[in-house]
Image 1 (tube, rainbow, N blue to C red):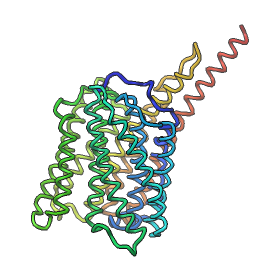
Image 2 (image 1 turned 120 degrees about the vertical axis):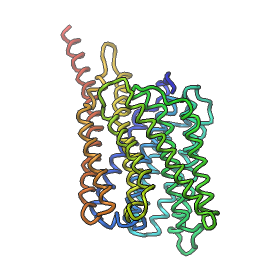
Image 3 (image 1 turned 135 degrees about the vertical axis):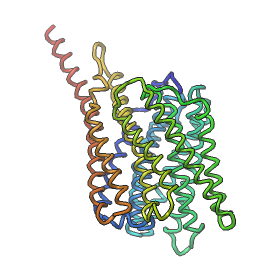
Image 4 (image 1 turned 60 degrees about the vertical axis):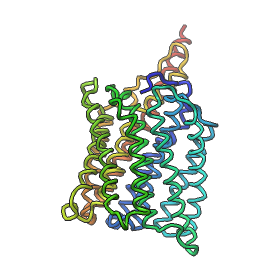
Length: 440
């Protein structure tokens, strides 16, 4: 873990807050879509509403948070500089947000022109983001940040693969007369594999090496894990890809072995993280602790569900594993981190603006932990209902959607109030100082 942070290299507050506030907005849109569509959105991974819902979650809810986190964390933790950061953040955000909306509508309404619009927006957005992050990661970080940056480099490589596969499939839907450039079933499986277990999972693993000890006041991850886990996961993704593309017809067992090892690697990470959280120096669990415990439990549940025989897992297994990975594992960690990152960024911005003799409000006053924990329980209820709805969509899809909307709205409200309280406290401080000066 890098203990000395380069806070002076932090990007402007507005540059990253737009990403973090977009996270609950897209979660709210995903919940609203599920509420509107109901059971068909959870009937099959191939239905238009399911694909629209999935991309609102992956590109919108998760993608926005991950892009914003990298724009914020890399300069501060690794001490690297992002080229033209002041225009990078709003520019990429606009392209990705617009492209995500266009792609989700394209899946929902099956309109080629919407796929074309999505490509026009998403490809430049991702190219800009990947190019800037590549230039930043090319710089030499301090020794303490190497485990994180090495894993983030691998995650960025996974993002390149994910975007290329997604673009090839979107091209097929945008210009259907030209035919598919790759077998759609294979491309879809690999796109999901590299996106969820590569880009999303590896980025979470890499960032965890820094944020878990820093925010949760735990010991560091045991020495071998940060050095080998990211490389092992990346190589297993390559093995699974080669097997799926060239060996599946003759050596189907390689798929099974690669899948088992990949899930085992993430299970090791989940167990190591739970062990660290159990050894945290603060006796009382805060909201982030609860979210991360739920995330690691979701990862372990995903591995266990994969290992169940087909007759026990039932027809909902594939969708349930997707829910556990996207909402349970990835979104839970992001939700928990937002309660640490956003108040800190607001506090630091106010501290820099404070005049002599003024003090920014304490971080803990911006979002009360008890309030954040209430949102955690809403999130946990939404996750449980979403999981159950994978097997009983007709009965539970809309209740799950309602809980998801409530949780996302509560998160958005909490983040907005943190911003309002911070600036409100500073304005009140300025008014008091002006009153005292007038009296003297």
